[in-house]
Image 1: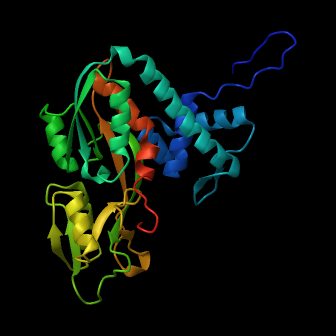
Image 2 (image 1 turned 60 degrees about the vertical axis):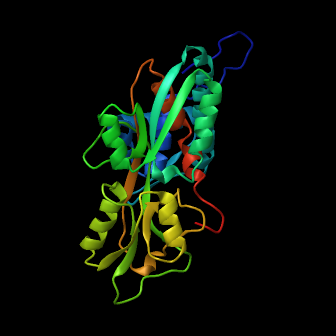
Image 3 (image 1 turned 90 degrees about the vertical axis):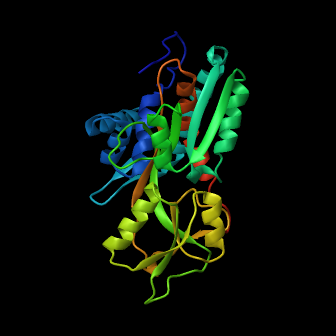
Length: 304
């Protein structure tokens, strides 16, 4: 703990270290110390120690723990917003003073999931801070982006976690949900019409596996390689799509749980790229620090 020991002055409050705040945010978002540790690449005991130190510094209970769930206390909810803003400010400060050293080209690949998110604004902010860096953006399916990265055609990818691939840093984890035109529900006794990306697609695989596990008949009502195409088909009422809960395209809404469609589980969005002095490493930090801004922008009033 760091205190001001000048004579006649009250001691300063101890510093809330970024590493402690990152662990706290991960626990709140994952609702689990175990999942938070996995996302951060740390031991569970280390994450628990970070939260305990943070609670000692705050002098407040920040996380409520019981046998069923882990959730923030009212003080924890208050700290959560402050913590996110502090970490984002720290990233902006680092980026600002490193601006003169950044130059070159970054070939970034972004998942179709981000078409209607704030990702373009985040990239524009980065380009404005680093005018000597040229950005080349490729939007595509996550599986295709992995192939491009592995082939050396992309420097950085921002996509859904591929099954069995543990590379990258987790920006966030959230539920995949079924979405459709508001009010649309499956018709009993008929195959469920699905609106899906073509293979290879992480989301397509998850959706079909869930349908098969639930022994529900299905048919492909529309297949499109773009999120704009899937949105148009879903808006037309052609069928149901699987999508990240906080990145739902405008005009569409989550299908109610009582509609009978199977749960799709969690998916992780990861940033995979180089480290060190490569310009792409700075962009990766910017994306991770702006993750809350990117995912929250996908929710539109009245449209899911």
